[in-house]
Amino acid sequence: MFTIPDISPRERAEETASKLRHIYPESEIQTYLPLIEEINQLKKAKNTLILGHNYMRPEVLHGISDVVGDSYALAKAASKANQDIILFNGVYFMTESAKILNPQKKVLIADPSAGCSLADGITPEDVRRLKQEHPGAPVVTYINSSAAVKAESDVVCTSSNALKIVSALSEEKIIFIPDRFLAANIAMITSKTIIPFQADCEVHRQFTAENVDQARSRFPGLAVLAHPECSTEVTVKADFTGSTSAMIEWIENHPEEKRMLLLTECSMGINILAQTGDREFLGPCQLCPYMQKITLEKIRDTLFFERNEVFVDEEIRVKALRSLNRMLELA
Ligand code: SF4
Image 1 (tube, helix red, strand yellow):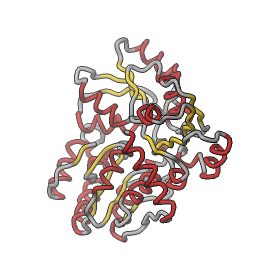
Image 2 (image 1 turned 180 degrees about the vertical axis):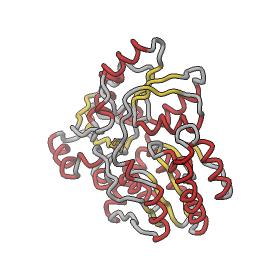
Image 3 (image 1 turned 60 degrees about the vertical axis):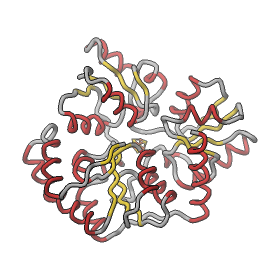
Image 4 (image 1 turned 90 degrees about the horizontal axis):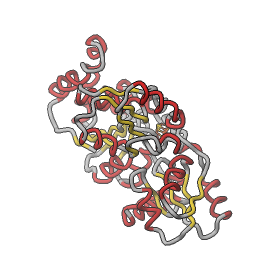
């Protein structure tokens, strides 16, 4: 996670332009700058915190975000926000987490139809059925899930603390939902019995072991980084597996690695390139169709009209908060 220093809207537009020049033609940049300045002025006028997930379009991430990071880092930033409005540029389940953690704030999303195949792949009924089928097994739920599913769970986890949470529980049999690939990656490194669910991320499931083999044979010495939402066939071949924030940290700590295969949503590589200007990311460019729904135009209109407010039923919120707080205790 990183926080962007508070500078004037005009300075911010200029700073953004210098980053976007690494990735966009000048004509395209010039179409974004007036909107970026307008949003940054609205942000100040309306005392708003703008959060940006690592998978956002570069003009959104670099142009208007106050805090940038993965879903967990942004949830923490949302919980500490003292502004009147939190405008969360990510997908819907992330905005719910912000509302769960900081219910007094007005939480907005630029496009409420920005879902997630993983979060939408499981229902609270599915969780209740799993609990009936495996009595006594605690439910560990990945943060990429709806508020209603978190409310049915014992503890939430992230891709970076999942192993720690599973290990901290006293039970030997754990229901781990909803991501079948994250569950399989954890099952590989724990002696506990992991009961998975069958949802997955439609972006990360597309990466294959062949992608890694082909890239390595073409570029010997290539560094391969994979997200744990990829299949185990992929992660066993990677040099490093971790959350988006962990991958960014790895890249920052390895300045000598100029060319990498980054097996995660494509915008992240583009955003790092905008930031550093000297890295090359290979591999199939898989974009998340839901993250791509968040555009500068929609953000400007959402903030101007203060529309698309996110609400979470209070009973669900209190139960989901308990699962989130349990994660903080165990991790
Ligand atoms: S990249 Fe995958 S997990 Fe992330 S929002 Fe898109 S579909 Fe969901």
